[in-house]
Structure formats: structure tokens, C-alpha cells
Length: 170
Image (cartoon, rainbow, N blue to C red; front, top):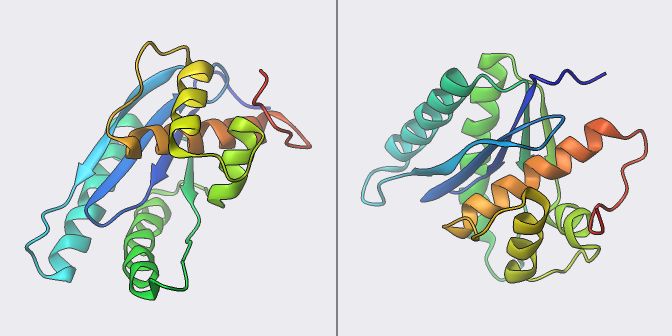
């Protein structure tokens, strides 16, 4: 049984901008949402350290019970992007592990299917679905925030059902 005070941290990993959103696990009320911005003109190890510290700061200040992270995706034409994203996801998962937070990962197509009923939904369709689900007047900006919130919503739905189903019509 999920406790009403439990929180879900959704993360959309990136090495320049990592979106995050924290929701209450039961009511899907937004606690906080934002981005961790990483300086581009630094060595890789400095950027990874900055990301790690940013995630740890979010975890320590908001104390989520669960973390949901987007799975690694790679387009065959851009393998370097997957490698860079793998670095980012690695430090995010390390921050969760060291904080004792259980992590669940979701494929982007799964999140899109849960939110819209279509695993190939566009970014604007996803943003509209997030607004509708969270009863927001405006689309969260930048898009990384909406993506992180969608991941958190997806995990909340997963926690509340034995057999996760699409929530596009809720």
C-alpha cells in the first residue's frame, strides 16, 4: 500500500539539462519541478560530478520515496549520444543508490503510451497530457520538466495498479 506522504522523483536525464519533477505518490500533486543545468565547457568528469551533486541536492531537500528514470535510448545514427546519456544515467542511478531510493526505469515509448495511449506521441502531445493530468494552466518549461513529470506520473500509476494500464483517458 502506498502511503499518502510518499513522493516520486521523476528524472529525464541529460548531460546539459536534466529535468526533474517530484509528485505525491497518491494524489499526483506537484511538490517541485525544475532542471539541473550543467556547464557545457567543462571536462566530462566535472560535468558528471555537477550532475551527481545536483541530483543529491534534490533528493536531500525533497526526500522522495521512489525514483523513476527514463531508460537509455539510442538512435543508430547517433551512438555517441547514447554513450553520453549512459554517463548521465550512471551518476543519477548512483545518487539514488547511495541515498537508498529504489529506482524504476521506463522506456520513453512506455511513458508516452501510458500518458497518451500512443507510444510514438509527439513532444507537444506529451506536454498537453501532462498539463491535463496535473491540471496545469501552462506547459512546464523547459520540455525536460514535462518529460520528468510524465515519468513520475507513469511510476505513480504503476505503483497504484497491479496491472498498469494506459491513463490517457483519466
